[in-house]
Length: 188
Ligand SMILES: Nc1nc2c(ncn2[C@@H]2O[C@H](COP(=O)(O)OP(=O)(O)OP(=O)(O)O)[C@@H](O)[C@H]2O)c(=O)[nH]1
Ligand SMILES: [Mg+2]
Image (cartoon, rainbow, N blue to C red; front, side):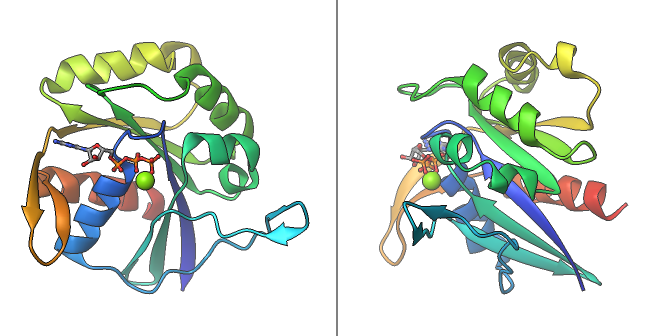
């Protein structure tokens, strides 16, 4: 089985964990295979991965691992190993933590030349508007030498589930389409 490693990152509170947990909740997960890298901090092994998921499709396994912007900016091994990087952008954040420029500079400096880059404009009420915002904020017109795809995800409604706690009701067709687009691009 061929393993693909897919980094999902973005500024803090952009919605990475929400996307991952709603995807797992709706579509399940296979057993995750960790990327073959060793990361240590002051001599200690670190468990960085915020959320993980995997999907087997035929002879391929797609391993997703979530890391926030400060972590990938420091431990760029996680960018270097990735066959694809997903950057989640929150179109209507309550508060912005961190800096898109700094994150973009690190990602573009360390991503493999043939890795595919996906942007997910989360929390979006107008798909075209938020895709345009991603293009502008991440200066994609100047970086068009890469394989890039911009996707959008409509704002979900927050609710409380007695079994699972706080959840966000995302549009499952859009969510499925995002992951299918990524897996199709990689397995081509
Ligand atoms: N209402 C609503 N809330 C959302 C949506 N997406 C994310 N949120 C909320 O935004 C907050 C941050 O979302 P997370 O998924 O934890 O963000 P994250 O990118 O994983 O953040 P860190 O792990 O801290 O970097 C949570 O309170 C989510 O419930 C959405 O589409 N609709
Ligand atoms: Mg998270």
